[in-house]
Structure formats: C-alpha cells, structure tokens
Length: 101
Image (cartoon, rainbow, N blue to C red; front, side, top):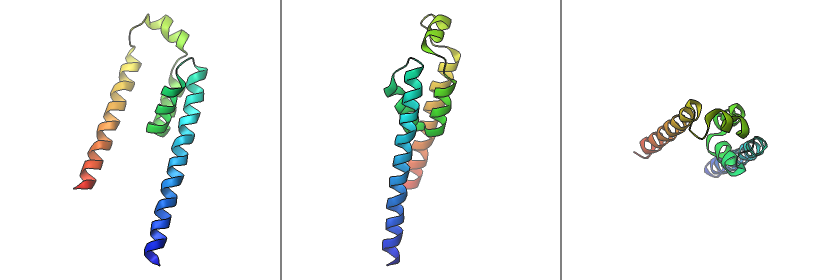
C-alpha cells in the first residue's frame, strides 16, 4: 500500500511540474511575441529555463530597439545570455550524470 502511494505522489508531482513548465513556456511565448521576436523561441526559454527564462525574456529589448542599437551584431547582453544558458545546461547534465552513478 505504501509503495503505491509513493508512486502516485511521484506521478502527480511529475504531472504538476510538466503543467507548470508548459505554463511558463506559454507566458514567455506571449511576452516574446509582443516584443517582436519568435513565440517559439519564447516558449523554449520558458519551458526549459522556467523563472530564469522569464527574467531573460522580460529584460530583453524590443526587436526594433535591438536592431537599431546593434546594427546586426550580437550585443554583450546576448552573449551573456548564451553563456548563461550553456552553463545551466552543462550543470544540469553534470547532475544527471552524477545521479546515474
């Protein structure tokens, strides 16, 4: 009886986590679209990075302002976001590998 309850709780927490990630993805997609960027990219920010992705999308400038300021090149903030994302992915992969050992 106890094992089945733990399994049910784990299953429910997985479902709730997935629903929250989808919700964050939708929120980020809407914000990203309103700023002139791809809603798919916004969804990816929200789904894969959750609160960090939301902060990144909120701090991002509108596309017109960005293009006028950069003239096509990547800004320092964009490079910082790229390195931050890669670093987070590497940390997640590290913890996954360590949990498998």
